[in-house]
Image (cartoon, rainbow, N blue to C red; front, side, top):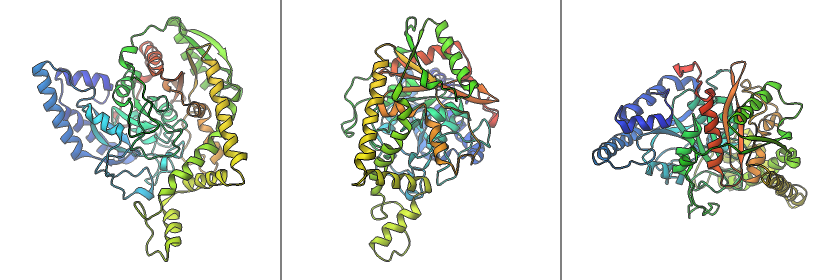
Length: 491
């Protein structure tokens, strides 16, 4: 069963080929057997999952008898990144600071998927507070890449990507602040979608950088991601950044013809310094779409080269404000025997946060300080507007943009631990999308020395249906997304 896509499992449940309980027990058994080595889960909610599966089976039986339609995800097991609150379940955000935090409410994303009948297998490991590109900053230890256990899975949604790559779950939720869905998707040979900013509610999702964070689906195929997005998307009055825009028919859009579609190739996504094999894999994917009737033109995004420095001013600035709430007083880690209030604050935060989180808090606080606000934060926001304008001009000429998702395949664990700037550059092709608030998808497009690579498709605002359609057409013509690692008998 673990070799099937989410869509195939949905069809099997509807036909009565297997029950949700059988399906859920199968994936729980795989997690028990293989995740000790992979470390992709922080919490496994076995009892809750089996109860939800039994309820789903009852619903499916009733609906089969009455010819009624079940929820979009009824009986399907999924995993949630441990950044989404789920009432009564530990929500750690990969940090010692929240190791003892039991969420008193449920995030909108989790709530929506449960309402459609999804079964929650558990919460996946992640870089601490979503700050990282390798899933090595987690308090619970690094996640390993199922294609090579000596390599990273990417981050910050590395736990979700690794468990999907190893087929320990058929689908998962992730979050993308600067590439944290797309980059690990590329490194684990899965499909991951970052929707338009505001398309999916952020309520109940622990904040890193509020103007950049966006929840999205991760699965084997674009078709699976369309199914998940159909359940996740929509306006939420509890989230002030949620946009009141009509939810598209993402599943229906998969049938659209891409003949005549114009693909823009940003020259900045193929610099001379890019690994030739990475570039070739992406160009091969684009050529495959040309065979299906798409047109290709060259475009330029001249300000995109400034996206990394702009991001690493804006994101830490917002993080420094968001993480100020974790002070050892109301919830989260508290130091032992504080001498006074100042000591409580200092030691609780010093003990509760890891090095990368501390680094970004310090950078952000500095950028927002009275003497440097205009020189750094304001200027970074101005650069952000230039990047957004570049994308807008490009979309006057093209329907979608394409290029590599990441500049390299999965690197060795610890290889960039002492070089944070090198680690930040892992997101060089993804960050601009977040600064502009655009939707983008990463899909598998080949291998280099046995390691997966991905190509991203960037769309205009609210054009998730179009980029899912392009990816789906590519995946109908190729089988890269069907390849699985030897680890855990995932093949």
